Image 1 (cartoon, helix red, strand yellow):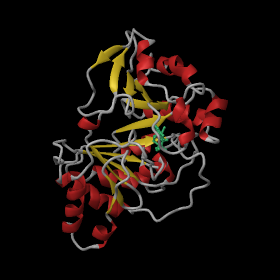
Image 2 (cartoon, protein in one colour):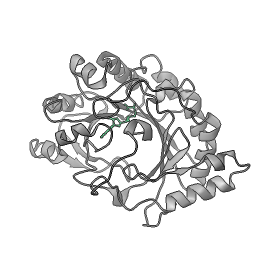
Image 3 (cartoon, rainbow, N blue to C red):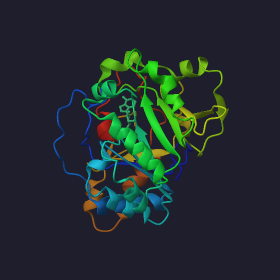
Image 4 (cartoon, helix red, strand yellow):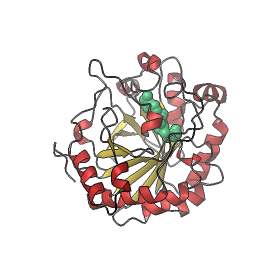
Length: 317
Ligand code: SAM
């Protein structure tokens, strides 16, 4: 459907759990263990997907928290993929639990996968993620490629003096593997003590004149893509802070607690719970329609006094 600013909204991100296996430095480092909260059930996600599809959504990304923590993640993927009108179901994961299940996820209907990886150094990775295992991520990457979850996208959030010395190592991963390496600018959410370490993506570009602009893989994608002669994969720069792309935003988010958030970088949310408890889908459709129509024009990250109410791990990055 078209929102009040003329943007076509066709992409839903569903955070199926707020729980996460990791405590990344810039995300939820300050939080303790995540207690299990009430989470929407497969049937709820399925109803939401059907209504969203009737309003023009054709692509759904499953995220979290860490989506692989949910035992019914394959059932959720299958239900979403079987929804008429939903052409693609993708997933974003830290890959800690991916080894051993990539092929099963593909069989349940998963189209593609994004994997977060903020360092290629085992000790640094463990430190940055609050105890994660880099070798699990690397094994997960190999499995995802073998399972045909392509093109595989890897996401890194750079922080100056922490992992910006690894940019060329990350880029080298694209040489002989079918994967895209994407650098996401650090957003002022979660642990705000790190935002001064943000590395603007223009710096990556300026220092590497051999990066050649490529047309986007998909309309409305947030990354600007670049190629390197002789490399199988691409480099993607996602720059919500230095080059905001709100005018092309095509997405809304639903969280595991039943809240619909029309914009990642604005605190307003609408609860879908009353509509999910009602009989029939009329109220659900009306609630979703109104929330999408009133999606904010732009994120509020740069607004004076803006303070995000939730970390990315709760909203679904
Ligand atoms: N657990 C999954 C994972 O690690 O990919 C999915 C959820 S995680 C919140 C999704 C993405 O959000 C990760 O790539 C993470 O790096 C990113 N993220 C979290 N906080 C962020 C921030 N403040 N700025 C930019 N990206 C952030």
